[in-house]
Image (cartoon, rainbow, N blue to C red; front, side):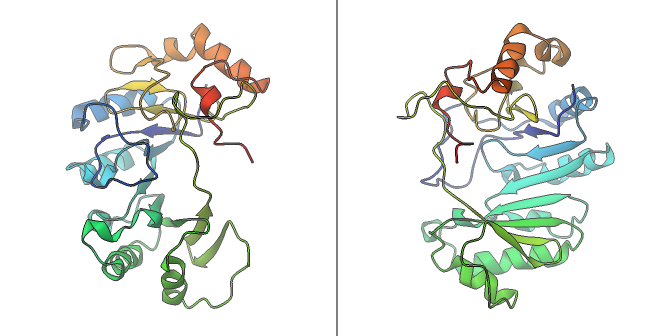
Length: 265
């Protein structure tokens, strides 16, 4: 079994408290460097692409640069999703494959002006010309953020309705609809539906828990632990086979998945 990508949550801690985020319900943990190395060794046969993202802010980790350099030297393509407040840590590190910056995370309540925040983002982008960058905004709620980005890149005409477009070589502006986080406590429920979890990717939480999907931020479907269990045995388990077979038949076997509407149009 090979995956297009593996999500690694190097920390579930965050420097922000965004209203749209489901929030962390687990004990705050920062993955150690030895744990990180162990994970890379074990997932190397399964993917070439790492995504530093599940819950938490990866740039909050004190060893983030060390992690990035080690993963790069190990032959992985590195992708990072960040709220952008600590983007300085990536300045000049031009071997990251892609950085996704959630511009919609900005809020004046954090004591930084939008002008300072966005200019800092632009400075780092200019320092990494070989890295793909996705500037992400919520649809219909950009609060002037869109205008600032377009003015910076000298763009005057954009499509009336767009999901994303190129603003500069390797830099893209993307718009997403704010989604409902899957949760046993939300009001959505459906047994019908598919997912890319366990087919396209898996997630590894900061404590080593293996989850099928990057949206299972609190480990509701824990398939095992990469530090104590064989990844090969986990992925060949009856539970995993049942989940994958269900998705292929457009059926959600797990109750947690039945509370997820992320892939619905």
